[in-house]
Amino acid sequence: MATILIMEDDMAIHSLINEALELNGFKTISAYSGTEGKLLFEQAQMDLILLDLMLPGMNGEEFLQQIRHNTNIPVIVISAKNDQDTKLELLTSGADDYMTKPFDVKELLARIHIQLRHAIKTSEDNKKEIQYKNISIDIDTREVKLNDEIIHLTGREYAILLLFLENPQKVFSRANIYESVWDEPYFDSDKTINMHISNIRNKLNLRDTNYIKTIWGIGFKFD
Image 1 (spheres, one colour):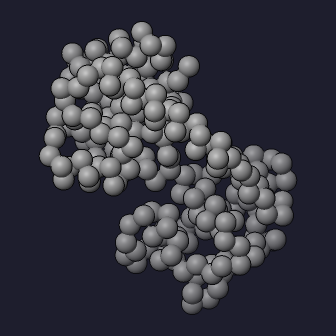
Image 2 (cartoon, rainbow, N blue to C red):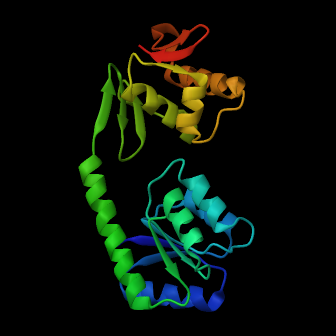
């Protein structure tokens, strides 16, 4: 049974969607603001998100931008905004589908099934584990292990470690790391990168084995 997060502040529309999903065997989680949706997203397991754009607290565009740093969960936008530029911008920035209000419930259900099938296939195609000496990363579960012991990393720390393990021996400047992980232009963020590298080293106890090497004047590499 798939779990779907409904982020919609209009009570009538929210109830309509919720009822249709439950009648079709889905489990639902309800959020009526962007901030509430973000909190629920961080706390609960879900398979798909239905996202309104004009939400109180945090709008849909900002919510989508924030979660796309760490997840590929399918997101279907349902909005009264029907101009082509908005649709293209949202689809380009991370939405998987876009429906305008008013919408047909049967069509929404069909699109949900399509996105869930696609997510399952993508997960099966991409299922793999990256192993480097005594460090392993399970891509599906985002589980990091050192000598078979689970290590808890933040989302940014995980993304940096994954970048290193996928590109061993490659030297990354701080700008390379920042733009790859944060997905935004680099603006003198040396302290931010240094802090995250230090945290990774401490959590993995790598100061002695020295897997993450500092290349003075350039950046870092995983050796």
